[in-house]
Length: 155
Image 1 (tube, helix red, strand yellow):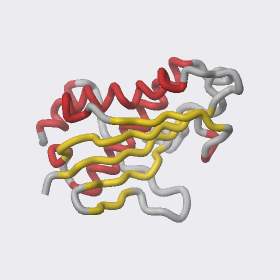
Image 2 (tube, rainbow, N blue to C red):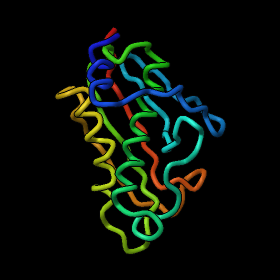
Image 3 (tube, rainbow, N blue to C red):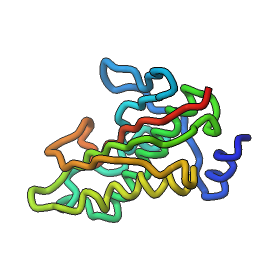
């Protein structure tokens, strides 16, 4: 088992089979040493969306944070499928977060910390990244959160 995956296991993180694409796109695409991961929803191993609806209205911040964390776990499941071993991650370059938000909700960054914190927990300093977080009206499957990512891969 890889060092990174051992650390994840010690943190109680297990990686599911990567979720299938829900439309006409590929889950990952490698360009040189960069691996781009398409947006991942908070889909649990049984195929259910953890949180649906607007954060700040139907969904509380704490559940939104948990959903962002699950999105990040699904991002890493896609990375494992693409490169075989999380030790091949040289750096988490960027995360993008999309938060279905009530019209007056302004704590999207707090919700997105669920994904960002997971990357740092799993990769240490290699997990520190740039990011964008935006509030949106709706996401696929009614999800409250979606996360995409870019990684630098070792050759």
